[in-house]
Length: 110
Image 1 (cartoon, rainbow, N blue to C red):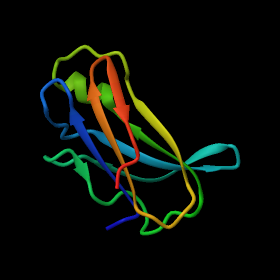
Image 2: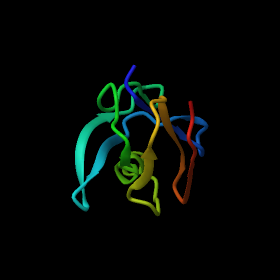
Image 3: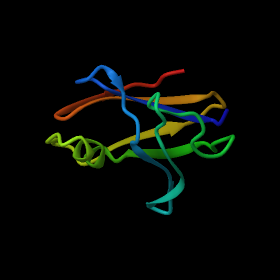
Image 4: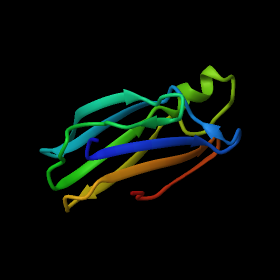
């Protein structure tokens, strides 16, 4: 298992959000450098996003929520959700996203 995983759930349908494009980036010299990308599976998960180990620092996970809702013919407010977080210890990081067309929430999972 990689150091970072994610899970996207569609709060409107109560089902996993399959087919969401996700990009992991690290902060480098004042900007963001893409490290890895993936697409959520039928269970709304990406089990391996990025390297086996993330160095201490700041990272972003970008979810292409606009395309997800557009494919479903659903109007939405957020074309993307960007979650910025800091890695400091050697623990596994799980960054889930609970998604609806006009709101979202996240937390640090395990």
